[in-house]
Image (cartoon, rainbow, N blue to C red; front, side):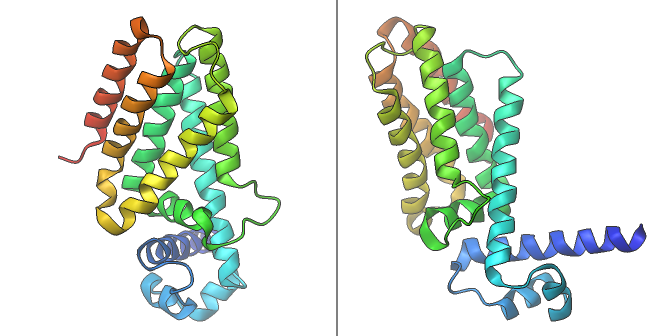
Length: 215
């Protein structure tokens, strides 16, 4: 049991080290030797858990997907309206990006640096489906205009979120991500939500951004 626990801890250490390097330097620019050095493990330990760098990328994106699903499940369990749940989910994912190198690296990997191999589903497809479901629910609840193209709005939301991080990676620290999410929602709410219901959701986006903002 103790040996198994040590093996699990070593695997987690390797994944975290790889994620940190992938996020800071990119997948192609990071070597296995650098990961070994950063994780402070032996090459044998790394190859015991991961046969190739691609396997490390898969593990990171799997953990990212799991973390995103946990955010969705936790939010769904609180009885929010569909639109509030969607807004909270995006800020929850932004919080993960700020606080945890694994989801942060997973986002960078998914943005085009590596192929997402089966049985993994591409995280952007998964997220777009979640957004579409929530927007359909919001339409039924009267929180968004009845005539919106839900699929187009869901695609735009995911593209905006990911694009803000891709652009921001070269221009600003990751801690700025919650501000960009708030800016996204302040524009989208004005386009999607009927005027009488806008203040509630604009206020929510501002409040959630302030809750994540570093002290």
